[in-house]
Image (tube, rainbow, N blue to C red; front, side, top):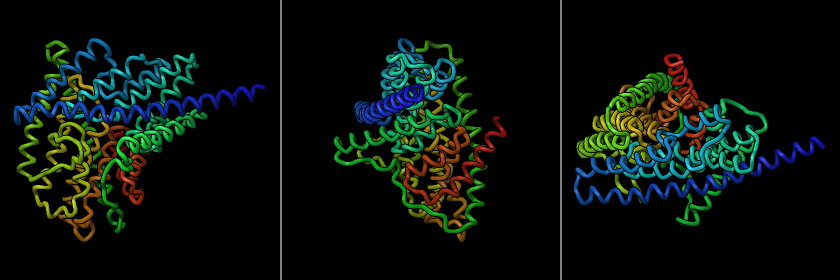
Length: 440
C-alpha cells in the first residue's frame, strides 16, 4: 500500500509539473508579445522627437518600473534568478503570488523602453512563481513545492529559447546545484511540455513556429589546431567574465550611493542607457552597421532585445570583408553593452542578464575570431571565423553564470548546431576554470 501511495504521489507531482510547463509555455509566448507591443509604443517617441528621443524613452520606462517595484513588488527588481534561488533555498519555494504578474509587467516595460536586459530572467522568475503558487494553493510539502518552482523556472527558459534540455539543465545546475533524485523527472517533463505549448501557440498565432533562437549558418571544426584558439578564447573570456561581474556590481553600488528617491533612480539609469544608445547610433553610422531586426522595431544596437546584433554577427560571411570597421564594431559594442546593462539593472530596472551576456560574448568572441583569422588564416578561415562569436557566447556565460553544462547544451539547442561540441567544451570549461580561480 505504501508503494502504491508513493507511485500515486509521484504521478500527481509529474502531472503538476506538466501543468506548470503548459502554463509557462503560454506565459512565455504572451510575454514575448507584451514586450513587442510595448516596444511599438515607445519607439513612437524617437520617431516624433528625433534622435534625442532615445534618451527620453528608457527614462520614462524607468519611472513606470520604479512605481511597480518600490510600491508593490521589490522582488521584481533585477534579473530574477537570484530571487528564485533565495526562495528555493531559504523560503522553501514560497513566493508571493503577485510577483509573477508584476515581474512580467516591469520587465516588459524595461525591455520595451530600450532597457539593456533580456527576457529569460523574468520568464524564469515568472514560471517559478507559477509553480510556487500552485504548490501553495494545493498545500504541497516543502520539497514538492520546491520541485514545482524548478519546473516553472526550467520550463520558462525552455519555452523562451526553444531549448527543453537546456532549460531543464539550467534549473537543475543553477538553482538545485545538481541531480536531485526522482524530482528531476517533473523538471524535464515540464520543459518539454512548455516548449511544445509555446511552439503550437506561435504556429497558431503567426502561422509558423520559431524553430531556432538564432539565425546562424552551420559551423563546424575543420582543423584540430583550431582547438588551441578556442582554448585561448575560453581563457580570455574567463577573465572578461570576472570583469563583467565585478563591473556590474560596482556600477550597481554607484547607483545605490546616489541620494535620490528610489522612484527616480531607474530613470537616471535610463538616461545613462539612452546616452550610451546615442553613442551606439553614431557608431552604427560610422561602421556601416545594420542589425537584423526582422519584424521587430528598431532600437540602437546596445538597447532593447539583443538578438538583432547577435544574428547579424553570426551571419557575417567573411570577416576580412568588413575590415577594421568590423573589428571595432564587435569590440566596442561588446564594451558598451556591459555599461548599458549595468546602468539598466544596477539602477533598479527589471530584466535578465543571460541575453546581454550572449551579446557581449558574441561581440568579443567575434573580435577574437577576426584577430585569429588575420594572424592565422591557414587555420582559421575568414569565412567561418564568426564561429568564435557563437562559442564566445557560451564561454562568457560559462564563466559568469557558473553553469558550464547548461551553456554548452543550450547554445547547441538555440542554434541547432551540434557539430561544435569540442570547441564549446574546451572554451566553456577553460572560461569556467579561470573565473572560478579568480572568483571562488
